[in-house]
Image (cartoon, rainbow, N blue to C red; front, side, top):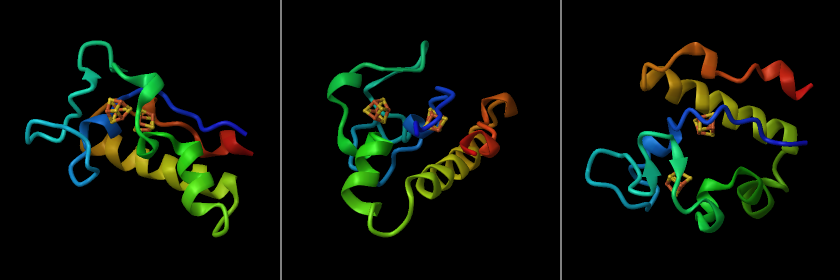
Length: 96
Ligand code: SF4
Ligand code: SF4
């Protein structure tokens, strides 16, 4: 099973309290704001890797499907907060 990401970049624009670099606006300095791409994708920290976070911290608490759904629900909240188009929202049913 693969985590489904629409590459909306809402998570990378809301990193306050995650220990990643920003200029006080919550937008990660590693984000290319024009293309929504991570400039350090190959070496991005574990906090930015859903699979890695599952393996490290959540594997004993829930299934991978449950974890992915929780993350996608959080994505939806961030997409609303950023007032992005609803088309960026991954349909939870796609994990079935
Ligand atoms: S908020 Fe979710 S869907 Fe958007 S880029 Fe981040 S992980 Fe992907
Ligand atoms: S390091 Fe990359 S993936 Fe992580 S928040 Fe910054 S831009 Fe996003």
